[in-house]
Image (cartoon, rainbow, N blue to C red):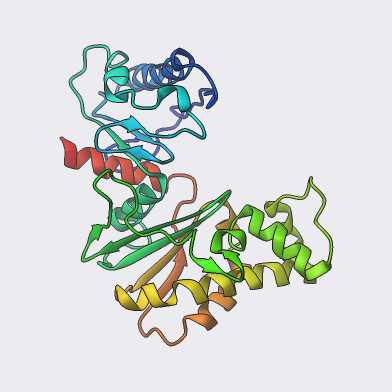
Length: 280
């Protein structure tokens, strides 16, 4: 990413990483990604200024140490900053780790749809249900750098909110609406396509998800005087079909801006860039 926050043409790449792999396999994938990134920067005439990495949790982001056991188990408690240092080719540049939802929020506050707002929260809809919040201009984090406040495990309708507002939530609600499970090959993106074509079942599923989310986050928005509510994650690309239900549930919160992230693909990169600038 350039100094003005744009992804450089030709510099995007992907490196396969096996979350169930050995310590050596995972570390080699990480160092390979960093090495290739540095090489590409130099090829296009740029000087690398830092390395930013998004990782799922549990993770000690400030120390750069994974605490996961359900995946990436072989690198638990390994200081990854030391691993990354091997790929820096002698460069003395900062290395930062960030939680994906926190970095999305940070990026949007620095140069996206939340710019100018001090009290902001972001709901990330995907395989799981992510949530991050900022108060008085500061992203709220635990001592390890994870989001301070979670909503995925809020009790709801005999289960938890993530049962109703995530990838599996869409399948669960589809079953409640129709009486049968959707075909295994049907993705949430496919439901979004069907909703765009006017499919009543898909529209009802999205409406209910929006309703559930609005009901569950209302008190937190009021408690923290949130003035900007963002939606990110792959499922939020179909935000249009949840929007009316969300706005209805939150209509009594005055002055609340509700929108999506400005850049679904790159919001987290913008947040990492801002973190690196602070680390310099």
